[in-house]
Each structure stands twice: as C-alpha cells, then as structure tokens.
Length: 303
Image (cartoon, rainbow, N blue to C red; front, side, top):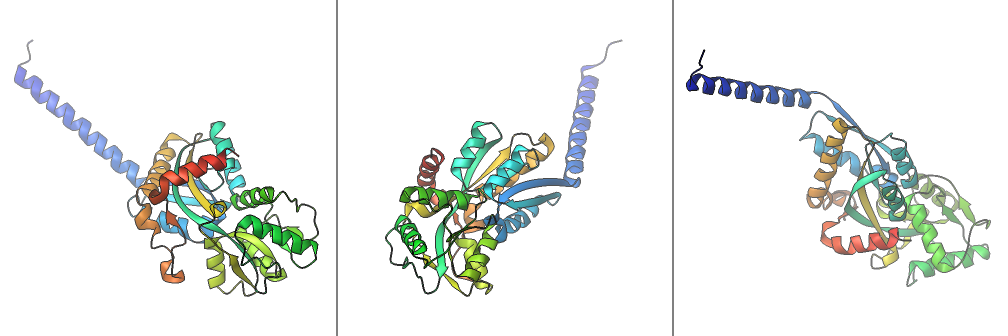
C-alpha cells in the first residue's frame, strides 16, 4: 500500500508538533520543580548581605531555584566543595583556589568583584600605624608595639582568605608573631574577630564590608579603621566564583546560571549595593579592572 507524499508530510508535521509540545511540557515541568543549590562561601560576602541580595535578584528570573549559602572561611568553603557538599563556591584566596583548581575540584573560575583589606585597631592607636606608608610597615609597627606590651593583635587562624592574606603580610615583614603573648589566635570568623578586637582594644586585619557593617550597627565603639589605603597593592581583595566538578548535572546547570548572572550583571548589582547605608559601595565590579585583577590573581596564586 502506497502512502501519498501529502500524507507523509502531514504525519511528519504531527510528529514534529508532538515533539515540540513534549519539549515545552518538559521545560515547564522543569521550571515548576524546585531546585536547591548549596554554595559554600567566604563570610564577608554573606555577612554583608550581598549574597542573599544576589540570590533574590536571581530568583526573579528563576523562581524555582532556592540557594542555600554555607558561610565559612575560604579554606573551609573549599573543603566543603571537595567533600561534595556544595555545587559552587564564592571565595577570595587565590593561593588556596589554585590548589583546588589543580586537583580538579573546582572549575570555571570567574572574578566578579573586589574590595580592600583594612587594618583596624584601638582609637588611641598605640602602635601609631595610621601614618604608615604600607601595610608591611603597619605590621612591623604592631609587632614592635606588641613586644613592648603596648598592643594586641587578633588573628583569625582559620585558613580563611583574610587569614591567608594576613600571614602573607607577616611573611613580607620577615617577622614571626606566632607564639607571642600579644598575638591572639581566635580561630574564628571575621565578625567574631572584629568583636574580639573591639573588646580587648586590639588590632586585626579585616575586609572593608564586614567592618563597615558592624561599625554602622554600633558594635565596634572601641576600634576604628586606622590603615585603609586602596592604592596599597597588598590590600586588594579579589572575589571569584567556581563550579564544583562533582555537582550533579541537574543542579549544576542552575549553579552555572547563577554565577553567569552575577558575572554578567556585576555593575548593576554591585555599584549601588551598600551606598544608601554607608555612602559608598561595599564591593566593586571586577570588569573595570579585569586585566589588572587577573594578573594580580595569578601572582597571588603563584605564591
């Protein structure tokens, strides 16, 4: 029995239509299903409210996606990724990130923001750091003041991005504060380190955002930002986002979408964040300085 060309064409059209309808139905079903993404992150991005703000903006486009942030130090965030308990990481310690990239734990890195580290300390500044020319000079002065029983310093001691930066600065001074009575290891996050520094009127290294947040809340009456010089190359703080290779394909798609959303919209998302409360952004979009930041990231990652 011969089937006419016209009938064949009609059958083909019906099959195609059914295929398209099935695809559309599958997409609607996929969009209706709730997707849960776990992201391990450095505390500074979370404590300042930035990540929840970014997730809220993302949900406007993907209402079925729920993002849970696990806020710890960068070292712990990367360890969580290695254990397969997160699908993405947002971190700020190039030397640590490089280790996990080389081991195939994380991939697809995107530098999306930067801010600056600052040195905070007691208002009377017993180490006299506020007129220093570099953060290396600042740390030398704190060391000398500590040895003279005039100053205390809080180290996070948690292998976070801030802790890694602090140790790198100490290394540049050729001085070793470890074990000195004035060098207090709290093994804690940035928020706790700042509160402790305030309580004992000590010095510590902080990211700008967390300090401004706590200062605004009135939780740091005894300490001020004493050395905050964006032009100091040792103080720039680079934030990157990565996908965890072990993440399942279904969740990975949305994690990638979230990272791309943040990266593609970094100017509109970051430039105004915090301005209404602090008079200046807490974070800056990376795109305007991308070549410089990539070069610095590579330098920091290399040791």
